Image 1 (tube, one colour):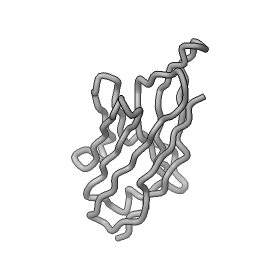
Image 2 (cartoon, helix red, strand yellow):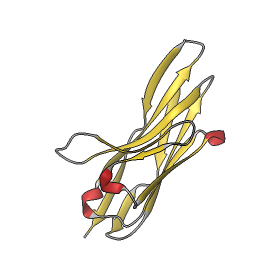
Image 3 (tube, rainbow, N blue to C red):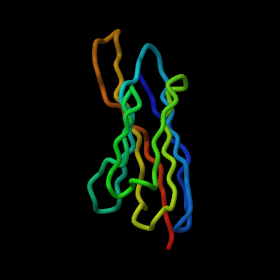
Length: 121
């Protein structure tokens, strides 16, 4: 079993910055992909940023140039640095990790519990 714990959300004024963290814990697992998604009220969950095991990154057009995703493989942690925040960035942010459990021979996506990010105008 793998658990993801997120931290770093909160309330910030437009133009401000926040850094989200998501750490995975458990036994006998390895992580390949990591990503951040968000869901605003009344909207579908959408991809914000993703990072592959080799470091290749992918961003939603709406956050390019403002957000940066990074990972620390030794700590099983993914980060999302969010700069120049806008009110439209307000949402619940979720991390997702693609995890391989070799003992069970499965590849499964785990999700964090979500953290609220609110950007005031």
